[in-house]
Image (cartoon, rainbow, N blue to C red; front, top):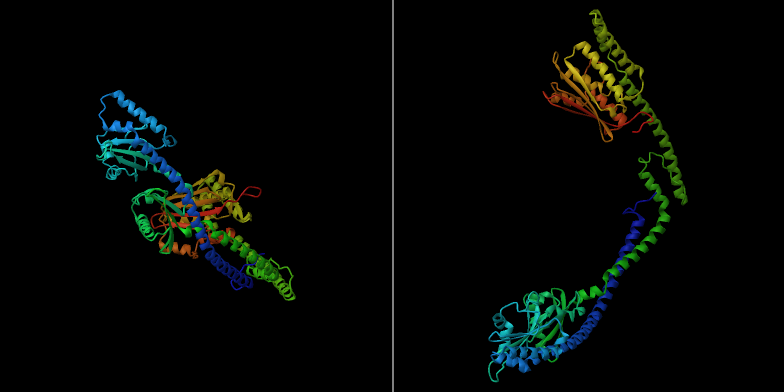
Length: 596
């Protein structure tokens, strides 16, 4: 038997002390360990980001150099300048210039970049596109008047880099892009009249550094105007919002003070900004790190928590095992005494442990044995008493009812109605045999219905057929066992109280199954029961009767509770002028040898 752990028990106090001490020590050690390790981790993490930036700087330098070479190829190509500076009436000459320009680009670093789009646009909307499989998705005038186009015209000879949410060609019109543009003049000394464009999907740029980012660090590439042209965090690409404002603020501060690294704390949240200028360009790469989250991600605090809890649980378990061995006999005795009534004085305690515990257990066992014998005697007396009460209820037959019934039979004989007299006598004999001679406590539903039919026949012989009785019994219910005379009092009550003297009506008796129960309904369409009478019935007040057995509704309710338990009884629904319905629900029981 298991003993419960109470707040005031020795085991509980020891276990609680150990748990509090272990958790307190673990928290203290964890705090010191985390505090020391955090700064080391942050510094190491920052150094690793520097190496990442150096690697990215080298990659981006190569990429930007290649893009510069492609634009320079276009700018220095005589074929392109001739194509844009002169009106070509000769179609073959025009095609030759385009062909030669394509060959020149093909021999450049262009072949290493399949996803970029290269095209040039003149102020007269004349255009050249390297890819034959792509076409312009917007008008050429719109491209010329775009922000990047106008900025290139304002800064001729300088490569302009910017970010757009969509490109100018069919391939890139649905994707964010980074655009490189450069304007120059095909006629010396004149204003720029040609703009070369290179569009690269921003996702392709992002792939070159995405493996260096994580959920706790972001990389942002900024152009010559400190505008974001690529980032793994989409919030920076909008060039709007609080994060972008904070980024611009830190760029200005770090550039002014010549800082490479800066740590900012706001609202308990620490952010570290790393900045590096990309070589040979005006571009910058920024790293934004959340050291706290990065530390928590790498330094799994929960592992420490679970390890501490595991060690604490192991220590507590060992202490519990030791204390249980010492206090188990007393705990078993206390638990047994708490469950004394539930065990019905049958549970004895094993005598073991110290001398004091053994003496206590032996005394307890002796007391339980004495109480058990005494209770058994009381229960036997009570059982005999209840059995006698049940038999007494079954044997109650009102002498006046017998006299009146015999007088009715005599009257029928004097009237010469031999057939009816015989049926009434047979019914009376059968009813007396089942009530007096049959000492069984229970009968089948079929037998109980036969008794009711005999009782109804006797009443109709005395009072006439004004009150009809109909039976509706499902065949599968006939062999279930029920207490004898359990339905007769309700039929009797309906006969003599539901219908005033000389009045007629109908009494219906229904028997059916409901799951594991049998349901009996006795329904009449009589005058009903007044509220005060209904209260008297429910309160089991005794009412003087001069009928067959005098077994009242209260007695039936008592019998049901004696046989089936306190959860079973009768239900009465009635109202004055609305008739009465009596309902009994009993567990299904069959004759010996049958299934219940």
